[in-house]
Image 1 (tube, rainbow, N blue to C red):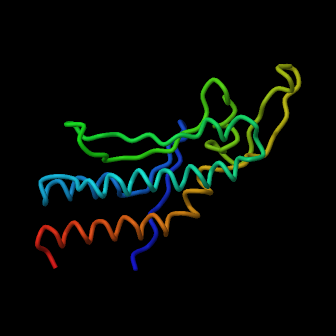
Image 2 (spheres, rainbow, N blue to C red):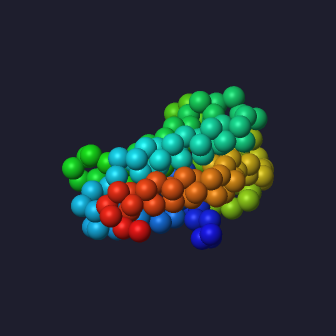
Length: 155
């Protein structure tokens, strides 16, 4: 079995499974399209990560409700070539800081008092969820890709 895909956390809290975009490009090049069932599998993968992340962020009253799955389509808009799970926004501006996108600790002023700063430990929820679910996601995507190749006549 192949190694589990690497998980990437970006500053905007997008979590993606490494290689999915490349896989979509290769499938489109060889099959002429990205299979609809791969699009569905990628959306489902995002849902799996988002649901797990909600559990890991359950200590917050605001972050879980901001978690959402965002899919990007190809140029024709017919199939998903990337899926991200995002958190934050106006209702939870602290989401990125707690994810720890810049390290294990972040600094902030106490109740806005710029003369009193404290260190606070990050509490990753997106990266933790994506890493925990990477094997399940990789297995689901591999199953879909194998089926697409078989339908195209490959063995």
